[in-house]
Length: 324
Ligand SMILES: Nc1ncnc2c1ncn2[C@@H]1O[C@H](COP(=O)(O)OP(=O)(O)O)[C@@H](O)[C@H]1O
Ligand SMILES: [Mg+2]
Image (cartoon, rainbow, N blue to C red; front, top):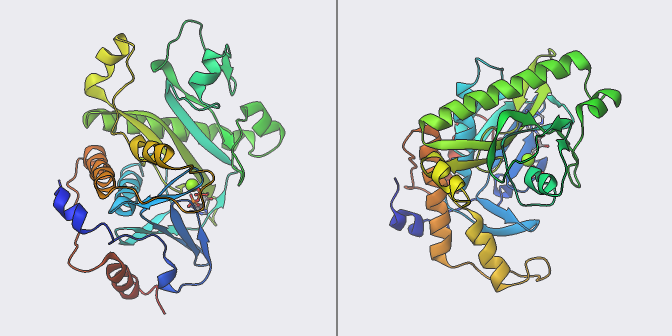
């Protein structure tokens, strides 16, 4: 585990934006900067922490954590499905095979939970008993495990993702039926493997989102990211049962506190400039991401802070031939 003092010394050693690389054709996502390299993509995971549709802060080492968690799962799930990962020339960077992306996000849920208006628990508690074609028995309570994980697909859209049923995916010909069957069995197998691996490390993989695509030869590949703290919910196994029986929320390695701090100190939807979050909060969030990395992978997090991360990225990309 990296020392809190190391994190505090690196508060400004963050990657907020990768335009310093001077590589043309960047597409900026909430957290990643993506570069189109022709038949490949370069996905750079930055340290941005986003919420309320904006960047709240930069969290040291967060980009490395997310990129390396994804790489860990990509390496360890090849027996289930091939994936887009070609190389990781830098701890924050993935070079991937560019695919044509299925227009669906494959959300798999092991538990009845959530608090947003579209979450499974909110729908269920409002009386809904069918979610994306999955029927649910009466009498379930919040945070209860489903008998079997369920797939609740959403459409991929730039505005907001909408739930969609399998019938509609097939009738709108978004995916053909035989391909759908394959994709469905792949995502359940991935979720099963993720669940078992997480359990060995004291974690419950609660729910997650997968994206898949086709490579130039027509092979199905897992793309984007897999089982990262940004695309998945994890709870601590050790206290789940006891807390569930006492109607308490499960424990997680909580990242919500930074969002709450902003909500309490400004109007994050309206204010043009946000206040700066206290160093301690930023460092705390960083150490929680690192802790998540170590629990998920069972590996020790290590990073070289002898030069700046910018310098390191430039060196690594130049050595791997990605800079002109
Ligand atoms: N191997 C791949 N081939 C083609 N597109 C990909 C691949 N991996 C990821 N993508 C796409 O790249 C985009 C990455 O955007 P992302 O950084 O996640 O932005 P956002 O914040 O909007 O989610 C997503 O639309 C994802 O579907
Ligand atoms: Mg995304």
